[in-house]
Image (cartoon, rainbow, N blue to C red; front, side, top):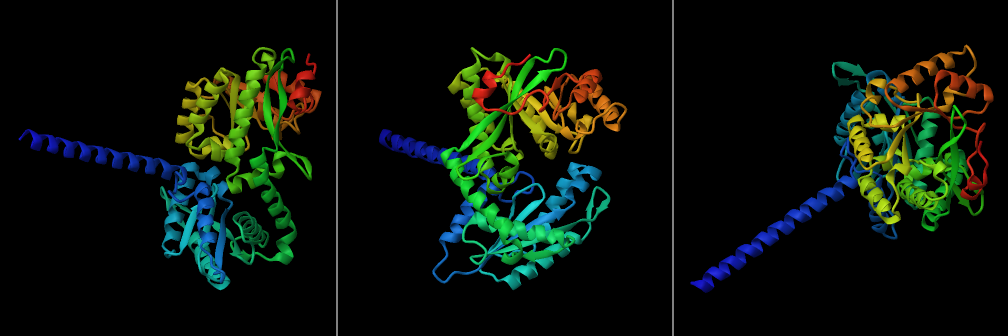
Length: 459
């Protein structure tokens, strides 16, 4: 009897262990799925795309079957967000996803690779079939969307690249499909184009070469951080620096982010680059915390992809523990458009980052879907006014009136106000008079490397 009871207990225990292991495996699978899935549409995202492409290309035999890559971009989607709000824009994307799914078969995959950008992959197909599918998708996009009682009309532009004719790797196919999509926009939008070497080759080839080099650059860490100082308006004393990434290209020399950030976002490399920049900034904080505290906080820009990346918080915690630095010496800058993309997610992320002790700033304010109504809910410390408001600033100008309103409202909300792109003394004087508290721009300090920023003499 005792033996039987013991055996029963052992069996029950093993069943419980097995159940717990299955539950853990299911939970881990859910976490993994979240990293390769778009939060809004539940479609696969860019992280999934790289693995999916490897499977596609590795499965090709010597007699290669054609695969179509359809790059779908919505025309003037920003206007929908600006006029109707981001919640309506999000619902439009969800409805569009549902419509396109009705056209798809077993050998096709729809992915969301950007804000209003989708990629449709058609296996074992032809140019004619890809063109027919493009026509059907454009018709679906043109059908009105009924959202919250509003009838919304929109159009799309599609670019088609074929494997292996237009590329034998993912980056070439994406670049060429994107180039074909831009051709559709140049033709008046609401149409599709197949990649054509004669018209698109020069531009896409240089971009493709740059993207190929970018993979190697990430692997070999060919990037450097430059630092641009910020100054208080009252006494012109240094009050922090902004870390700006540069690519030290072995052939083309030092490249600014405008030449490679879009390519990094298209390929998903922006995440690795962003974490590299964060780690280097933490190393710099550790180095400067006993000698150059006037450089704090060091501000690092995060892309929209990285801001929503699941490992952001855990990575930051590891960096703080590894380099034994104060989180208050780090500032994270998020563009206004990124913050307004998924407002509820942004609010939660801002709160969690603030709880970690990190300072937060809204960058490029005024260029996106500006709203002080939402801004008051963001747990941020600083508001950076975009340079577009500064470049034509003069006494009595419309820019002066707009800036006065922005600055006063921001101060009342308890935000520190910084003006970007200050290039003349006249601009600095107007901003100081209007109550702007910090200045940044070529007038006071250019972006320079670590050695030069340490050697500069600031008043």
